[in-house]
Length: 260
Ligand code: UDP
Ligand code: MN
Image (cartoon, rainbow, N blue to C red; front, side, top):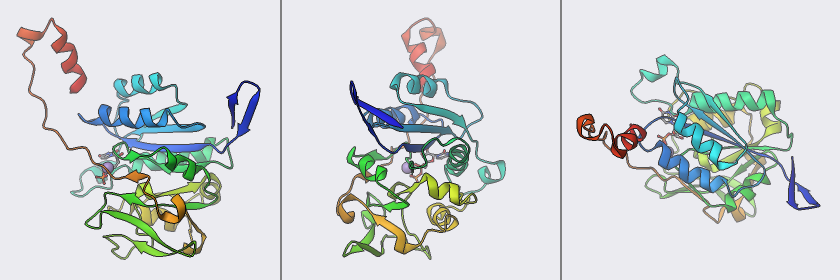
């Protein structure tokens, strides 16, 4: 991927494949608006927006078109047997669909993959860090568990362990927002997918990719900076029905169609 900086001048930078799982709810458009307007500042990206739904949300489609970002809008509904479970592995079908697409269609061997959930908060400096990943990069994530953060432990420039409030037997106790992997790793490990195991999505994926602790590249100034936060948008109650007799012919009806 070649990026034109100024007329006549161009530099080459690895493509970032940003995989965003999303699903229809009242908070979807506000969350995606914030993420889209962050990504609009990031050069050389391909944004894979993958809906856990049976139908593409036309409001998401319109939002994506307006951004000017290079994107792909796809569907990956959660399998029925998973949907029935009390605790669900959220966003797994979406992320695996994104991985499959990259394996089949990648254009940049030097590209890097990042799972960007629709509700997190991203500092623009994060994307420079992701882009420099050679195999597996990791960095701190804020607003997680009672520890208030999750991060690799770094000593003398090397990852020696993990600081995370919920280790639970995981080899890689990290959050989805806390790592990026190279396209080449994904190509080399065709079975490197994410399992439908709530709480173990990250760990299972990194294990399936055969990642070794010794090859983790600590980013964000040796994991001394927080460039991403696990913010969560409060779930709002379903909106009251608009009375069509009163508002059927005015703007309130138009607005109502957008929030349900
Ligand atoms: N998600 C999804 N289907 C669902 C629930 C969530 O695709 O049924 C997506 C959601 O939009 C987000 C990601 O999966 O990008 C993680 O979900 P959520 O933010 O609800 O999980 P949490 O951050 O609370 O673990
Ligand atoms: Mn979330």
